[in-house]
Every structure is written in structure tokens, then in C-alpha cells.
Length: 243
View 1 (cartoon, helix red, strand yellow):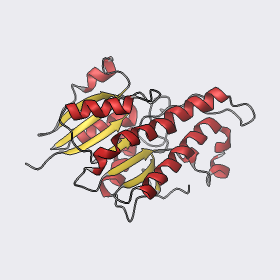
View 2 (spheres, helix red, strand yellow):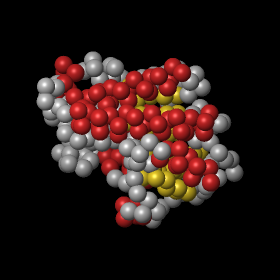
View 3 (tube, one colour):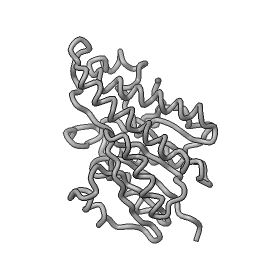
View 4 (cartoon, one colour):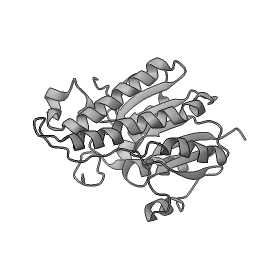
């Protein structure tokens, strides 16, 4: 049997992250690494009961986006579990404090904490897993789960100036992803906006979590350096989003 495809996904205890995890666990011959805040939590323990396809296994590692040392420790745990490379990383974990706060009243704390979770966390994760991505025998992929609120070009259309903390953090994530593309010619790096999916607190959103997940995976599975890397896509419609 060929060596398994190894996928790392952060933020897998609920929503789109959990749906991504379940989908990959349903694919044969995969090692799926799920990043969680607390491996002892009930939500994390429930993941261990999810069904897996033949030759597929689940490994949970602690990755709390606001803890700078977690990504490096997670890599040590992965290597201890026999992982010597990673083929796909989906940086899905993110946070949202207060989405509506005008520019003239947003607090430094909101900006700092949101940036730490949505931009600095993925950057530190990339630094930790980059050597394992380089060892992939496939075309390694880094996927940043972003938001159209981070698009500067769409700000007048979406009125996203009303969400400065979140917008700044996601725009920074987009910048970092483009930098990962430019600085690593062997890597496929792109951003995907899942859109308004029916996740926690968004029951009336236009897309289901499954639709968003299927859209994300359609981009991931078909991504190439030439056609996909350095770009920003809407998951469900497939349209390219301006930076």
C-alpha cells in the first residue's frame, strides 16, 4: 500500500473544521491530524469516535492559536506518532470577538486579540510545519481559511470597514499566504473564503456547512501551483476574490 496522504486541519471540534475532518476520515489511506484547543475536552473526545475509512487514522494535537509555542509542540507530537511529512495543511482555526465596531471606537484589545488568533497563529503554525511540508512527495498545499471581510477591494461593497478588528486580521492572513507562495516556489498556497455557512450563530446563512466544506475541498483537491496558488477563492461559487 502506498504511504498515506497526511493532512493537518486546525479548529476541528465544530463547524466547518469538524466537517472537513469527517470528510477526510472517510477517505481511505489518510492520516488526519486534527488541531484542538484541549485534547481532554468532551468535544475532542467525541472526535475519536468518528468512523474512518480503511487505512485511515486520526491523530489529535493541541494547537491553541493564542499560545505561541503550541505549533512547535504539536509537530513534536506528530513526529512521535510517526509522521515524517505533511501533504496538506488547512489553517481553519479562527476567532471573532466583536464583528461590528466602527473604526473610531474599536479597541486596541479587540484588534490585538483578533490578530493574534487569525493572523499570528497561522503564521506560527506555518513556521512549525514548513519542514514537514517540504518533505511531501506530492505537491504540498497550504490552505488559509479566510473571509471576504479581509478583502480590501471588496470593502466598499461589503461595508467591511465596520469590522476593523476582524478585517485587519484576515487581510493580514491573506498577506501572509501570498508571502508563503512567493517565498516557497515548491508550495501551493491559497486562501479560501467559505462564505456565510450555517455554523454557530448563523443558522439562516445561505450555505450549509456541508456545501462550504465540499467547496473548500474542491479547491484543495484540484489546486495547482500555476492555477491556484497566490489566489483567493470563494468556496461555493468558485469565484476569485480580489485581495
